Image (cartoon, rainbow, N blue to C red):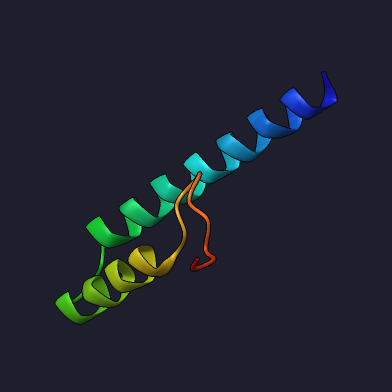
Length: 54
């Protein structure tokens, strides 16, 4: 049961971070800042993806 709760907390935290990043991209002051935020979002590993190269 503890593992399930931890997974739910991690998923909620990930969703909060994703929403915050999307909000920051939408409210970016300049196109340059927007592009930098998009680049950061693209370099972050997504849920379920392994960062290792096989």
